[in-house]
Image (tube, rainbow, N blue to C red; front, top):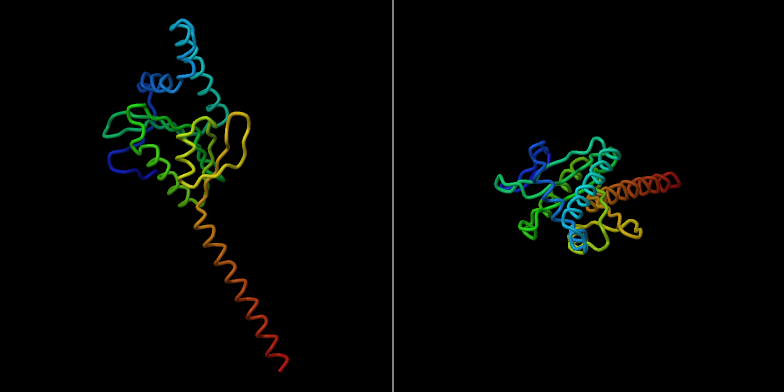
Length: 190
């Protein structure tokens, strides 16, 4: 599983976590909260958007792990990860505003990178183009943009150092075979 610093932990989401998850989702929807509409209507709209998001995850990634992020035993976020055959896919990561910019998301991502490296996999994710903080963090951690649409950048990370090492080893093996082959030919012509 994901190895995190001592104070941080991931645990499976439980039914009793729903009130926290609702508040967390609402905290991320500043765009809806600023609409010039009745507060009850906005709350209903936020709830509907949350439901649509979760149904989309369940339909497209039925085996994804839904984890509550805890810091010193207190709920501070949520992460959804699909461990596909080829790559890990970060479907969502959200940290409550009061715990943001404290390295929690970075620690989770680095733990995912270590796990992916151990499994010989990469990590895929989609990030809104306007989410500059998240995009910056992903880029700092070595993610690259693979494709872009009107709203999202599809990003990818793979342990390039390991890939480069494997490529260098393969190149060295191939060169040594070529050198052996050439030296064998030179000896035969003498």
